[in-house]
Length: 330
Length: 206
Image 1 (tube, chains in turn cyan, green):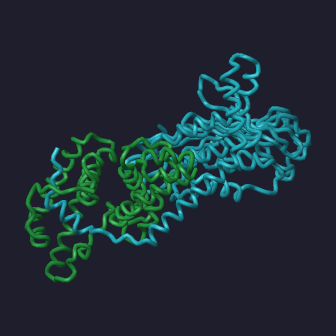
Image 2: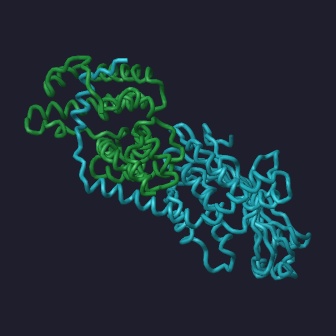
């Protein structure tokens, strides 16, 4: 195959020239790569104990197949192993791109617990200190290539713990306040996502800087709260998604639940005490690293609010981001 | 460890990258081997001011993604160019430039600034050339730039774009023909600037 050059090739070459390579520029590149190398080495050092445990587990499993010992060791870190597997798949996923004619579409179905103090009910008679109810809503988002975002929110209905709560809710006009049954559409200019670093150690540091400090919740929960904010985003790079997943994999106390074959979503949970109440936070991630479900559940009754055990305080299902050809619900 | 680092200088890029998965320090060798080429690519695409940041990002991504490297054994430059293309594309978006392509065409680069007539012709030609390049399909334009500007061989371009080498040739032919159509007197103007060039001249590639 002849690789001949033509006049236009030489003209282009002449007009772009041979830029001088300054040693200072090379040194600058090297210094930035050195930082990344150093960060990776630090992360490796932090992870080493877990790696050793996994290697040991693998060695045992290879030798004593079929014994109960394997069952114990195989459970050493199933959450970490699964998240690493998903992180690899996420990395290999092509980034989502849209043309001028397309939109990136996402939808979430949410149930969130609301709490209105008795004083917020006006003259409506009510016995408890606070009225608690669950509000369900749908939020659809269309991201355009011109940085505009259309957000359509529909508030569906409220569900109550008792009939008295329901009566008080409507009597106090909270249904109007909550826009029950209404759909609002808003178009805004995308403010742009946070600039998250993709170098694991830097991302780790940034997440820690953004963790809430005053809520008295365990570090794993606060860390997860920030890290899931990253992977909840539809429009992040595969590298960032993978880096966030790997950091989540490193969290203590994260449990892996059996995968529901119907959905093939990897399920994880962490249990902790929130204001004295045992709480479980569960989240599901699909095989490309997208957050698809999350739920915060009281495992114990909240006697202060009269909320029985196993009541969700927050629940959300997310669709995979898809490309939509119009600003209509696909 | 010391022994491995000494030996690494004789390794191919693919071997260095594979070894760097265990010993990340080895990735420095990739920077020292290809830093100049990636910096030159970046300078030609985004200009001198942003080039070192773009080039740094290329190597940082390469470092993070090195476990996925499955490219040529001899040189990882096509892989680095592939990463660079993405980084430059993001740079173009992020900087909100009106340009639809990232390419710095400068008459001074060709030494035309000394001759007023040359400079006028060159600037006019640059405008026409830029418009013609903008009208090319992205894939054809990138193929042409990798060959004409960056000096990659067909094999390297094929590896970088993930296409068969034969497709490189057809894309180049189409791109050149389209440019000739858009800039009818291209060769006359070119000859007045760089002197007559024999069609089909063979040239060594780096």
